Image (tube, rainbow, N blue to C red; front, side, top):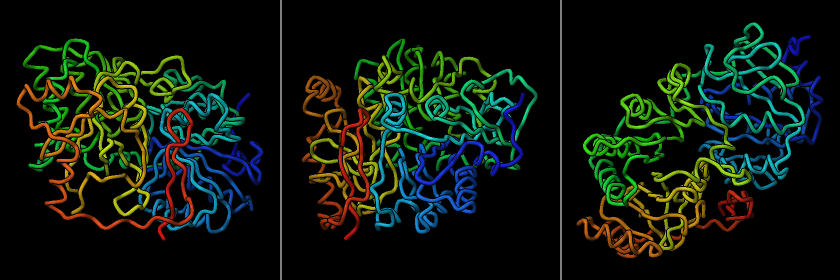
Length: 467
């Protein structure tokens, strides 16, 4: 017996893809992914229309989806993140139905509880055997963890594995096992693994970024969580990695050994584990090739599913054991709500990812961002999109001061005693406006182009077309 079919077209026919179905994709190859475009192009060639695409994320490489929307091949989108090119087209109203935005944990949870039904999952597998045992750790397109694909494999009615590295049965180091898989197809290339790198994965040298990172690290230091057993998540950007660098220096000085770090994993976090600052890495997504090599070679670097990472439908998830998370923002407001879905002009260029998941789960959630971004103030009276509720954000750190959520008065008093530049959120807003001026109101009063769901599936906000 073999599940191997001769072509993508044969796999699509065998899986029974028809008009009006929902198909899903994962994004571990990020801007190097070829599979989503490959499948949609073949569906269009076969005359299939009116597809709903549930993709854990869309990047600029997925720009061809715009043409498929225009041609009615794709009439619905569900995503956790959307890059600028597709996002701008959506903001201009190209899609008739509103996009559904979820968080990473929310997507897994909605698949588990049946709210996000998938007819056929197409899983890009850097390594697979003829029965569908698969891994992201091996092969020319190795991307590391396949954390977001677990839910697709487990809950879709049909599962098609697409690989460019077919190995003899059985694949010994298997991430997702054959029992979930219906068909396997081998193609020339599923993607370019070098393009999984997200922006910069080097520590920033920008003085403003370093100032923000140092202040954020001081909040961590004085919070009381920086002790043996400490757990930590930060992003892959230059300023976020600078926070990790300062935290590492404090852990070295105080001889602290943390329990785990997680999130999008970079070589810097791998280095912290290898130096003994963390016992293990819980990895739902690799952000560079150093992380890919580590998850392949180091047993302390553990692959986890999106469900284990952050699903609110699970009995517990790793975010519930997280001490500190460092988050970004395109906007924040005086109620500490955070926007990571749109830019300051209301154009879609992002998404929650794990932002709202970790903000709610972590004991201390810190937003670290410059007070002025693209000549506009970070802090507004009201964000253009509420991506993460203010009640789950503890601290906003900027180069000009630190605002602590009024609900955490004890932390505020601790930081004041430590001599840190603690300011009221309204004061930070005024400083920014004195520097950059009061921005003009953004006119986003057209029809709804996206619905932003909170991690529990409830409607958090909507995004309107540019009028």
